[in-house]
Length: 107
Figure 1 (cartoon, rainbow, N blue to C red):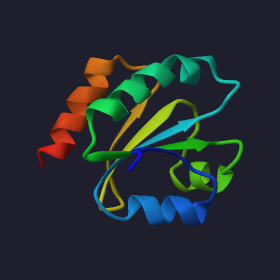
Figure 2: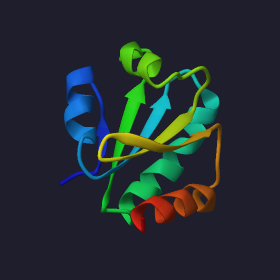
Figure 3: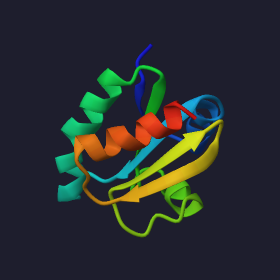
């Protein structure tokens, strides 16, 4: 099963994040820092098969951006069983993101 999923609707998002460990990437095509994070998120998704990665384009699914209080992008929300456990803003190194994933995976 592919663990990097482009979210198309609120319903799809709610279905995909209700169980397990999830990293939500709030982004937009016009956002240069978001594009800089694409290879980082792609690599993380390949190395962390026990985490589901959900990409939410804030222009296509603004309801989710509103739900999670997204004011600037990229924004990364880390969820366990649908509950937010951590949030990270802006561009981050792969090692910074992996450290957070390690912490939530090992909880």
